[in-house]
Image 1 (cartoon, rainbow, N blue to C red):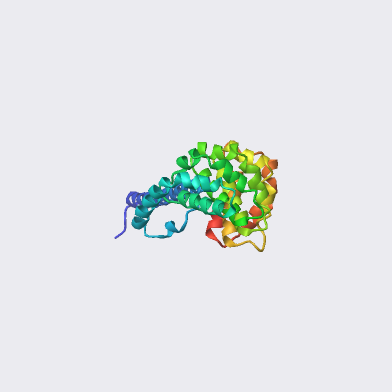
Image 2 (cartoon, rainbow, N blue to C red):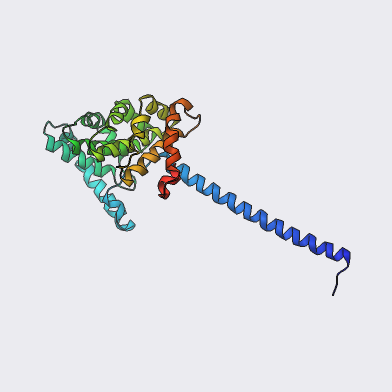
Length: 265
């Protein structure tokens, strides 16, 4: 049965409307997904705390063990403080490792309690122990997790002079120490544009770019890319001349096959 011209026009109009509505719906869904991905990326770019083996356990078990571990170690905090300030290297390492584990608890690590115990300046001193890389690593990990806390926590790390030492450690011959320094600087830079500019002013960009080499482990590439993104983000943006040297590295990174590297780049 043929339709009258007016009826055919109405059918075409209805079909057009359906097509437009479908297109509009698709566009809105895409916009929503882009916004969700953007928000997730923004959250991931701020700070991240390095967790220990507890983070790999069942969540319920982890919450229970984390709480008991935190309570137990807070009870022994005075002894841990004495160990950190000891003149004996083994005692320093043992106590610093205990602090690192305490700060690596997934839920509500006692960062403020650790800061208030007065050990941050000692951790910064231990970063200079080039003769004891394992101790350097543990101290760097502890400071990384302190810097992952509030802006006040980050400021304590900055005020005790850790940033230029972390920049120097980007040239450490020990892979783990270099990677931990990368992570620490990423947390400091991710706190605010002011902290980002402070890190850049200490010349952190060039030694960070040096980590992108053919010998770098995937974990280093991921952490270095994340830290580099923190060096380049924020409002107001950093001065272009400060971040311009990163362009060749970013150009290579956007062709990475690793999703995490690609997202941060």
